[in-house]
Image (cartoon, rainbow, N blue to C red; front, side, top):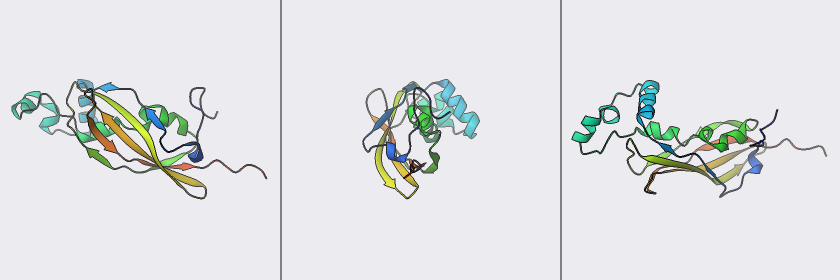
Length: 156
């Protein structure tokens, strides 16, 4: 089966610069911190010890940058559902952390198509990822680059 009723499959040439994909907002809670600690093995106190954080002037636990990168994953929203047939892989991801994120913050991720770099049979979709908090402050921005297949040429 190709695609789903909600998300037909898309290939490189089906995307347009400026197209934006919004993902569900997430409130960072104890579960997010626990999962990050289990997956990464990160035991830096500023990420897991509330009293340590408060003694350093933070209002609560500080989210790890790697924890935040997970929230801009295309698979966390609709964008990933369009790529079952066309995605070859993630080529690169750069991120810039602009504001700290603490336990209890609500974050809104979005992906915008920033550039399209065509090749012969494939193309690179360059996204601009943004993660904003409940105060509309930009907390993270990034530039993931995905290699996608082009549609197979039709019969002549």
